[in-house]
Length: 221
Image 1 (spheres, helix red, strand yellow):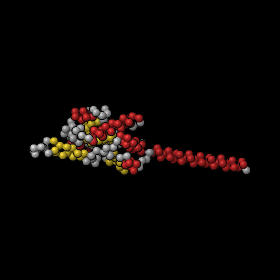
Image 2: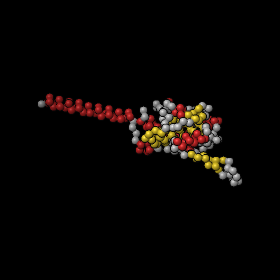
Image 3: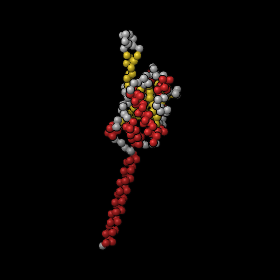
Image 4: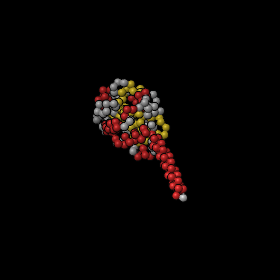
């Protein structure tokens, strides 16, 4: 009788072990997929589109004089920001947060194939020298980009970035000589195939940028 009880107990323990093993592996597989819900991303200021948005062909130039076009996205995840060097607040603040975020990536596997790019929405004043001077205040690997305003404007509109130039009235009532540049402050995420995958909200801080980016990368690994 006792022998039968021992056999029954052993069989039960083996069965429990098998169930636990299968449950663990199923859980591990789900973790490997690293699925993340839209709600979880929104809570930290990020949004990913259900379907990636294609980016039309464009030709611009970075602050080192090299061509910047669709091919510049190939094989990399790009954090793309539209701004300008004379921006008084959101641009330097965003670039500062992106610098910290990029430094944080040194502790993980993602820095090597991540690039940060600022495209100027004020190419009239942001020539190559001006952009290079501005970018010198941030990480050496960051790219500042300018080019023909019509090309930049079309690209910004295609990526749902609001932007515009507003003349500043002249004090004497004459022809305005100065202008302001308005633009939305989203940080755009372009995948290694050169498609627009989603964005991070304006004024997002370094820890949330890192968390959102890691979640998105894990979900696409």
